[in-house]
Length: 505
Ligand SMILES: Cc1cc2nc3c(=O)[nH]c(=O)nc-3n(C[C@H](O)[C@H](O)[C@H](O)COP(=O)(O)OP(=O)(O)OC[C@H]3O[C@@H](n4cnc5c(N)ncnc54)[C@H](O)[C@@H]3O)c2cc1C
Image (tube, rainbow, N blue to C red; front, side, top):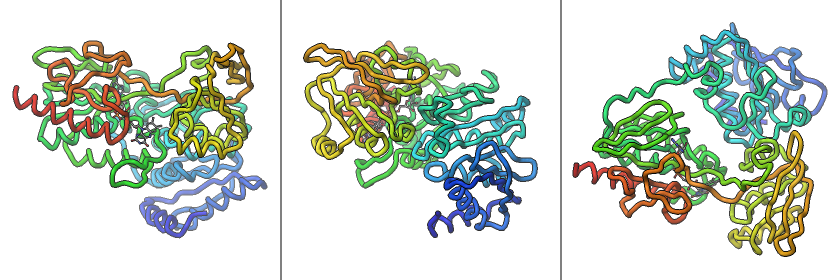
């Protein structure tokens, strides 16, 4: 199952095991059980510190990693793809290696007295799932009151359908829905322990430069600012931004192909080379103008001589009835995350631009049937994508149609759209709907900067806004075209612009 190269790498990692790990294997006679057993046996053969013992567990097939005093981490399904790293990390942590998280987080996890039984449904192509799986595995390793099972959706289709799961990662706690979508260890702790888990920012000095947003624009601003020797910090709701949601990138100069999360990992290690303090899970709420600027956040105020806004953009919603109600219950945005849950089903894709057509093409190898709905009379995607679309037999393109409603009961069941040429309302049964109609800038939180009618922040050629000392970069601005290298370029411009401003203070 693993090629020689990977086996050699895993063998090397397993040398880090500090104690014996017993893998409890629960299997039946089916094909999936055979595949999972082969995987487990292959891994166990790579270290003398690993052994396999048969056991009856809730999921069949599944396996549980156990060692002295630790027995809470299970995998139902083969953790390959994006979950392979989660599996190796769990093995090492159960095998005695301390998880690389803050001491404060370790103490918080250890202080939990309640019994918490987590299950996370994932797909192996989901790049948002590992963060959740890894955070919960760490909790299960550190606290015997906590257990966590990663459940691979395609292995347990009936279970996933019974639980009406239509988006991954979906986490259940003691049988109840706990979280849907990407989340961090801090956010999980906040939900479990409450607000007391929230650490104060404690930035009591005045910074030279404060960057709001940790996507490619914010990260580039930070690197430029740090290289000028500025005293600086970067705060964001979440590190990574949209690139974390991008499966493959082929247009970063000098890099033929890279997956989004991998690219952001390399950006993080680049940032770590400099003295940039990074704070996640911080939501900017307001900028207060004055001789010193102040950023108000959900975790306190920060003073700075200059601020760079790089809060990017998010998926746009259609605003039709049913869209909110069936979010994660059939309504989805990310095809590579949630696409695998619609195997052999019928789905609608809304939007005939590049994102919509790419989504339809990606889904065509998974879903049974796809309808692609476009409001205007023709698709807007690049011709190369449109040509590709024509070759695919299970995609039906509908132009001149307006989505009116999404309907269902527990989950999405149908779509209603209007034929704009004759006003006829048509209802079609569907199992899923991927909305791909563009992005909106994350700028609602700031009202004292000038914006255009789309909500994009107006900047001059130095990245400066109308507020003295406040600069902006990337997708949250009116920069023409929203692309990675463009966001990076504007991040550099804003940082250098702010540096020039600081020099003249
Ligand atoms: C699916 C997809 C595929 C794409 N593919 C490509 C591609 O192949 N090539 C390409 O060049 N471009 C691609 N793009 C576009 C590209 O990803 C963006 O142009 C770029 O990532 C924008 O970067 P940014 O830093 O401006 O914003 P973002 O990446 O959106 O980052 C915004 C940051 O701000 C934070 N934030 C938001 N609001 C707040 C707040 N109130 N307080 C604190 N923090 C906040 C967020 O947590 C995040 O850290 C793609 C986009 C998508 C969605």
